Image (cartoon, rainbow, N blue to C red):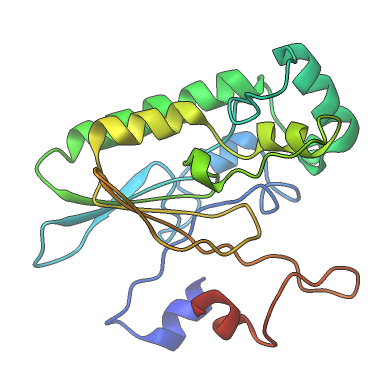
Amino acid sequence: MEKLQELVGEHTKVFFIAGNHDMLNDIDSNQLESNLRPLYLHNQFYDVPGTKWRIIGNNGWYDYTFADNVDKTTEQFWRWKKSFWIDTGIEQPMSDIERMNIVLKQTEQQMQQASQRKVLFMTHFAVRHEYIHYSEDARFWNMINGMAGSRRMETLLETYQPELVISGHLHHHFKPLAKSNGIYYNNSVGYHNNRINEWNSDDFFTEWTQ
């Protein structure tokens, strides 16, 4: 990120938050909650000089609430995740529900402190049910939806109404979603490697901006 900041120059600010793949290696939960680098915006904010805009960042998490068409208990979701999902490799000294509770508390505090600002909120995980793909596959795909994000975050954002919301995680491009409380963007860039190619173009910038 620091190298990218050098490349774009002082008139463009670069920030980042961590997604689940970033959390898999060489980092623990305490580090993720710390001020890792000046450009790391998790549970932090940046006020754009000369404007009323505040950028608020939070890595986010999930609590299985987007898998609301699956009749499973929290314990069953947890066991499924530990058996089949990549996030089992993430160091985590608490349950997914407890972790999401922290995310919601952090986000609400940030929103309350920004009551006089126009807000751009950025997070990794999905924040709108319109992004979720439901299928007949209750054994796998609909279980994955439980790890997509949180309806409770969706409700919180509807309450505080940030003007712009940016999310990712879903490996799929979505058109901007205009709601009464703001505009939501999710322009996720998926896998592009020797095993899996989810791109429609040959280079990152084109894929990200199309």
